[in-house]
Image 1: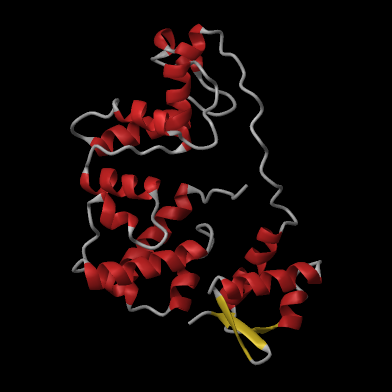
Image 2: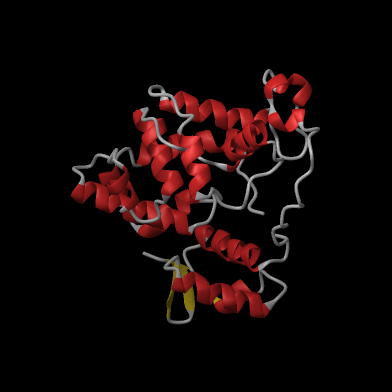
Amino acid sequence: MLQQTPVNRVIPLWNEWMARWPTPQALAAAPKSDVIKAWGGLGYPRRALRLHESAKVIATTHNNQIPNNREDLLALPGVGDYTAAAIQAFAYGEPTLVLDINIRRFFSRYFDGVENPTSAPSLVERRLRYELIPNKDGDIWAAATMEFGALICTARTPLCDQCPLQKSCAWVEAGSPKSDPMKKQATFAGSDRQCRGVVMAYLRSNPKATKTKLTSLWHDATQVAKALETLTADGLIETTGRSYCLAN
């Protein structure tokens, strides 16, 4: 499972990012390698590339303003239903359907009496949840339900005894029945994803490195070769002769 970046680390990084690239136009003009370096350990590095690509579209097509309608948002590189809805809610206060796993779990228990939601929301789930959204303060609704799921109606040890909705919760009323065990994600330690992260971390700190050097950073040369191949295919790194560096 991808480890979450602590909030006390995210906020300084966000401030640094915004000071460096305060507008989509500024980010669009930045070299790709600088964006990848600044992204650091915030998550999958491909997201940094999609953000960079989106900034270019916003700067050239939307007059340097992030669009607030669903169609234009979905047309941006890397933006799907969840991201589009989150932007509309948190940036513009629109009453949109933001469905992260915390919100889905809270609604699944409270309304449906089921411990865990399905792996992905169905059309029926989307329709039913959309009916819950208030006509105004979409950002407050989205933030409140998200925080409720993250802090009270948690995945493993929900704080039902502290929950103000306990008496009207369908799941509690049903005796808090267990759902089928959720499919476990592959272990991160020793995985191809971790190997890719090691390669990226080294290249963020060093202008270039030979394959021999990068191979020495990991216990499995086959995994390193695969990491170099996939990172190159993803456009995150490039090779110049016998060395590798972040994509420019």
